Image (tube, rainbow, N blue to C red; front, top):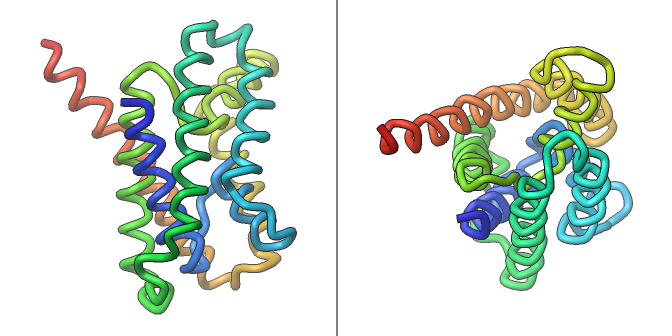
Length: 190
């Protein structure tokens, strides 16, 4: 399930976000930023950034969460590299920003939701947010929001302001979808 979540996330990030000038927040947005400015593949930067976040979060989240997360994050990088070799499925989706925001959120929300449902996470955001929350005594949601906001502000260096609004929409929608996917699992267990 972790690998499936990583694959769905990689598919959406590569085929929607990377060609539409609509970003995500947190580590996903950061890998897109690094790809744009430094031509570093998200397959590589995602692996490095996630490893750093997981290393920070191991004491807070436990070894099992980190193992599942490393598998999910590794799957994301592997599948992203594969999709780079195959090429973009919808190269002109950026001309339809509302569709891109919704479709991107569906892939991100579903991929991350499946991975977290399986006991891990595809991105280091979870480990980072939980660790910083414990370290600074703040709510995890606050850390997520601040990380997303910081990355989206930096993304203004290559995404026009009017497009960032679509990025905010996709971040909000993907968060809701993650919650829905996680609750679907809880309903089945009852």
